[in-house]
Each structure stands twice: as structure tokens, then as C-alpha cells.
Image 1: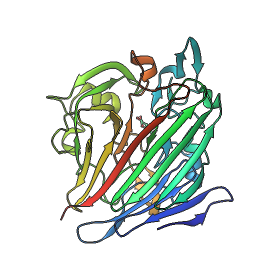
Image 2: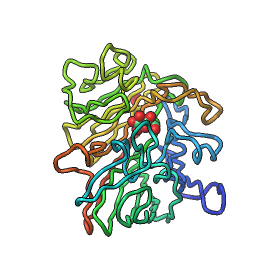
Image 3: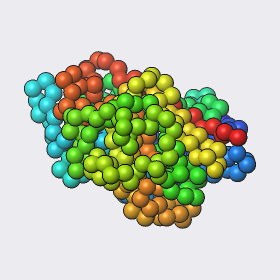
Length: 336
Ligand code: BGC
């Protein structure tokens, strides 16, 4: 069942998707996931994503809690890239780089939407030159709730060659924000990750995870590895790195033993930025709860950030007339 449950103003709505397993509240502002309510192994219901009580915080604050991020997730080095011999400049909003699509990226835009069966279809026309990106980009994000799985499909076409790299920036805390993430266990099917510099920008170098704190090929308690003496961990103040997947489905699992809650992420994309919320700053979030650093895990499925400046054949190029079509699903289970 999908219904509008609140109106923030005449353009921004809160929409609830609900079935026996999950209640998901989203807004057409930034296609933001506001709440995900699920049971634990004793049938207690909690909200497993971070967010704000005061809606204006989504519009003014910078941590992208729950937001859809675009046109390009993560960083573009110095906010510059060349395509077809032309140089483009994006807003600089994170050290020397452009982060998460610029100052007024998709996270801060109002989307049109329609409800179709058990889906919400959000759409947005990003005009040629918006935040510096080329091409009129026709964009759609389709959120579907089916049993315990929330699936998001992203679709886009452009009338000029451009770049695109969309993600969802939910901050998961499966304890229901009752504790930090040190006791959460993480599994990432990945043999290598992209190294970052001190500004969080991928350097173009990759490290093998084997023998490092980045090896999550078996379920590992985050608290056991996050403070390891490792140069890349220090640069990210924790995990804040693109992991390259080595399988095509169910690539990431997050598990919280005390509640039995388990999240499985499955995506068509080749990797994810795993971010342990190292830069949360103690701000007050939903239910008046204080969010200190490392209070959540973001699993930001995407192509390699800054691919346009790093890869020989950048995976983030969307050619005129072609369709960007990627899907990520989030399955919320209780293991009893
Ligand atoms: C980035 C972090 C950043 C966070 C919030 C993540 O995707 O990798 O470095 O602090 O988003 O903006």
C-alpha cells in the first residue's frame, strides 16, 4: 500500500510504502529515504536509517542522509573533466573537489512523481548546464517495495554525451540507532578497493584486500578492523572507499547480531563506496537522537567515482541517445 502521509509544502510530500514486512517513508525532495521501519527477532519495530525530524534539515544540511545522489556520486577531482575535447567545470564543495553532484545536486531537487501499483516513479529533468554538467538529462528513479525488499531502478537519457553516476546515500544502523556500528558485521564480496588521497578522492591506484583490514569476504565485525593501523584507513578516518565487486549479485551484507537484523544489497553496478559515517558530527537526528561519528554504514552502489578522470574507458559516460539503467535492491531480513 502506498499513500501520501504528509505534505511539507505544496510541492514536497512524504509518501509511505507499507507491507507486512517493511514500512518505507520517502520524499519527492531528493527522492530521500526518510524512514525504514522493520522488526527485530523479538518483533520490536525500529527505524534502521538515520534522518531528521525537522524536514528543513534535509534541505540545508550536508550529510546526504537517505538522499539520492546525482548527477555524479562522490568526488570529481578539482571539479573538472573533459568530454569530446571540451572541458567542464563543476562546483567545488568538498576541499578542492566536487562532491555528490555539486551544490544543488539531485539530493536538493524536487522530483515529480506518480504512484503505480507498489512503486513510486520519480522523475526529473536536469537541464543542460545544471551544476556544470552537459546535456538535458531525463532522469527517473523507480522505488518498489516487494515483501522485505526495497528496489530502486535508475533510468536516464541525455541529448548530449554526458557523465552520470547515481547512488542512494542511506545511513544504515540496524540496531535502530541504539548503538554505533562497531558491533555491526559486514560482508563485501570484493578483492580490491580504490585507494584515496587525503581529500577522499580516488588516486587511480587499487589495493588488494587480502591481508588488510579491507578484507570483508567473510563477515567481519566493523569494530575489529576500523581502527587498524593502515594508511588508507587513516586517510579516510575509517572506511570511505570504493570497493570493486567480484560477483554480480548479493554483493554486500550488513548484520546486527543482537537484533538479528540483516541487510543484503544486490546491484547491477560494479562497486560501492563503503562509508562508515566518519564525518558525522554529533548532530541531532530523528527521535532527538544524537549522531556521533561512525554511527551508521552507507553502502553507496556506483561506478568508480571520478572514473571520467581515471579510467581509460570511463564507465560513467552516458552517450547521447543511450540509456543509463541500473538497479540496486535492499533486502531486510530477520535471522532468528
Ligand atoms: C563520502 C564521504 C562524505 C559523505 C557525506 C560519502 O559518500 O565518501 O567522504 O563525507 O559522503 O557527504
